[in-house]
Length: 439
Image (tube, rainbow, N blue to C red; front, side, top):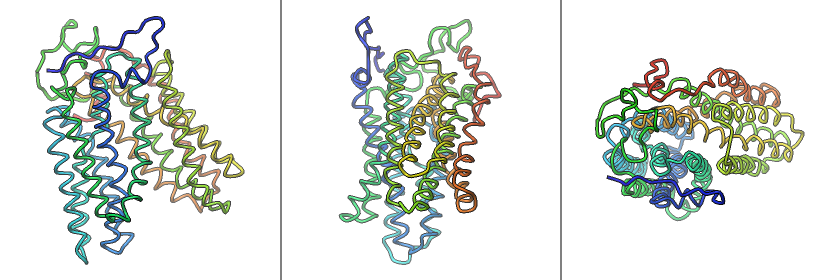
């Protein structure tokens, strides 16, 4: 049974920062293992796309296979996270990671033969996507066990979000380095190995011991599940509804519209650059988005006394929508890069706050699932945004496309403001049947 991890001492002169986050017992090794496995998420999609394209000789077949992979991975994420919540990471993650890796290798083996049947390839790809281990939601649950202190937990979530974003930039670069050496199939195998190694190292961490009642995950005083504030029985295993009420719905909404905005932005930046005869500008404009997001995320984590989550969530969502709408008015690539960087400044804080709100809204035994719902909303929103703006670009003026892409985020702000009552005990939130996203 793991020992309780306490927050570092905080005296008048002590200002715990990111070093304190990584300096907590077992935090550094646990986070490194999670990052190693999550690097696979940046490697496998591109490598798999190239593998299927090479085998079938068809871009449409490759695109369809990857769309199915993404759908299976995203839509079943809460189900996989629910298994982790119910049975614990040490029982669920290793077999899930082994099955995921085996299906990816089977896909590589199938596509290595000339004339691979597209239906067989698609079936393997979908099965692999359905088994994608939820390392991100699991790591965010582990942060709660590692860092009960709310200030350090916010810094940990900020650091986690920025690091994850950088992994999605690093992954394709790694694929580019691997292609001349091992080819696309070999790159898929490397991605599978990264995830398997990361998952096994993650569950080997002492913080993975036990289930949802592990030390550091108990409800705060006054928020216990038992009658009259009594703590629930340790070791009790039961299936519970997700709950979360308004807070979880707000987190999912904010994450979804953030994903929608980002999914639309990539294609609009490409269209803008090509329209100005500067296609080479796409790379550094999108790099400005990542840089702005990193600055915003790390800045949020560095604040000692930020405004409450209920205020931050609509604030960051509004900032993203306004910046995105303003970006459409940029006369050239330089100012567009500045505007996109400003929009990025709100991305990581919006997502970090969404994860924090979801984490605080539900009982300990549902935290992995709650984080998975936020993650699913972001990915689904990104897919819808990319598809939607693809239908608009070329038919409408680009400034109007930017405004339409920003509209969902701006429309969500009054809804989030009406949902600002994130208070109340967790036991009340948990029993709110309206807030149950899944049983």
